[in-house]
Length: 86
Image 1 (cartoon, rainbow, N blue to C red):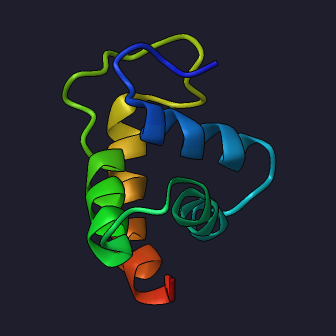
Image 2: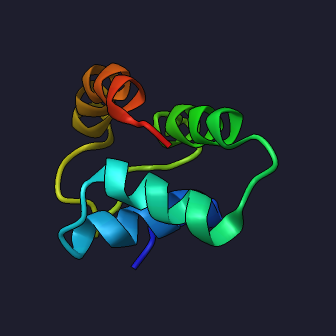
């Protein structure tokens, strides 16, 4: 289940991660499936978007508070961007 307020791309990656895939693998699948004209720009957009949770309230389906997720993802974003090799 994708919490209310998430976009298709964000939901797609959340579902992949819940299935045991790393975000980096999900991004590679996203690029392969959606074939954006500018893959690097699309990946950066998705990574930034995953960190934007202002439109999402705490939800019982979330494994932790929104604040904890934001803190985690803020630290994780630079690693994801550095490691993604398209």
